[in-house]
Image (cartoon, rainbow, N blue to C red; front, side):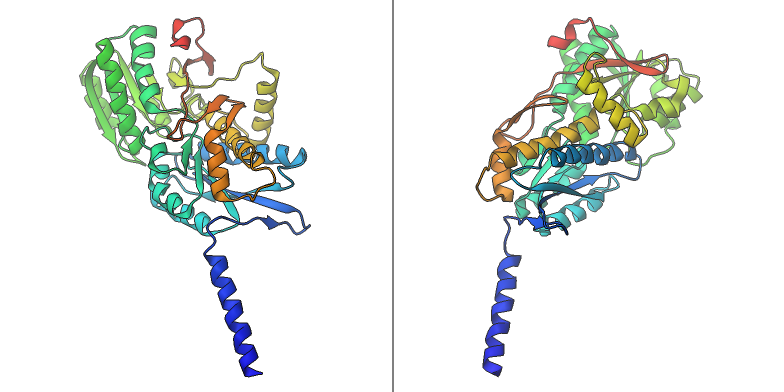
Length: 388
């Protein structure tokens, strides 16, 4: 009897070890017995980028509800587990590792910043799980692993556009000052802006950098002001309102531009009249004549309580991209690797426009110019930049 019990115990332990070694991912079931595919979401739900993290959460849940209501995908319902990365690279990596170790999670959406995504790249590579970022735009990110993808576009496209078409062509300016966050994304954006600036002969009369969570920019702004630029360009997302307000506090009448925040409603809410005239770039802007886009925007505002930027639109499209990849598996086994392999070749016309991945795992976007006028963002149409 003891021998039989010993054999049973060995078999149970062995089975557990084999289950723990399964890196392909497994599906689960709800309490109602429905078959489930689960994704993980990494997003900064707190901290300076919380607006964007909340947008990720709302938009991905909207997509999942729509898909499930329509019958799911390949007989499965979708679920998403949301984790707050706080915009911190270590926190994001710890959570990515947790998702990677959870065999029920078959793909990760997020994170928001390029720095977090790049820190997570070796983790998701080792776990063999897709990390599909709605917004990472550092040109080095997507190529770090076969499992790292992004759909925002790349800063080696947007930053030169900003220099050549917003500053040089649209604004017709020559001398500019730069202030940027000292992060992987911030440095990449600044460096790629300089490449575009050199092509059209822009003069960088002064520049300054700062670290994450900086609050007082006054000394940096005084340095920039002393150089007498025609415009100041901010390379950041979360700190833009603080910088805009501190420029106003210096009584500095200067053209302000921002690369990074898109058409963030938070800027207008926190800056009020100080935001008037702000110029920014975006790969997507809601078309008031597009019923589908406007209905989506209305539903998002109802749930989130604020206007959407391009960022939640990209998060929404990420869910549908994963759906497309899973549908391509058909009757085959739904594994992390199968999702990755199909995602690489997916072509999808999403809410934010057409998506086709490069071999590296990122996409090419065209960019638009937006400005704050009379307390809201407007698209500056009628210029020849749109086809460049």
